[in-house]
Length: 224
Image (tube, rainbow, N blue to C red; front, top):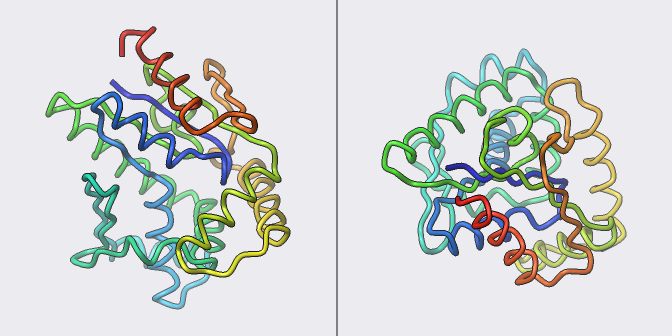
């Protein structure tokens, strides 16, 4: 069974999805980390986020994710790049490369491959991203669209950056999130929109535990 959790940056998708997966005994798949890994590959090769560059970068990429007690680890080839994916440079590049159609096709295929592998093992999966319920897994058993007020999302993202040892100004982070929202919502391929049958959940006034409980409750109501 698949639970799809979509939403804009800073809405709490990653932490919430991880906790929901833990509560239900499911595997957690962080698709945003996959786009960040592609962005890192572009940066390392000195390539701009252009379709022509993708044609040369993507064939060189061997990507894998491992879900464990300490979270999801992301591998490029033989290298664990998990700790390199939350920098401001990678964040900006990931938003740009995610608009390239060939990148999205490549990662949609990878996401389906990983979920199919888990399904073959009898495992349910919580998948989070921006087009999971609309494009990647339109038949997911439960679709959630997480959102929150811009200032709340910016505060969360800035706190996350500081925990990672980066400097962060809340106002600057909020402006960056506004730009990402515009880019994600207006792109021609797989724009950020709620699926027609998604449950929209505004987490602005919710505690972390409250939002996890709501989603777990919805999953259990549907027999997931």
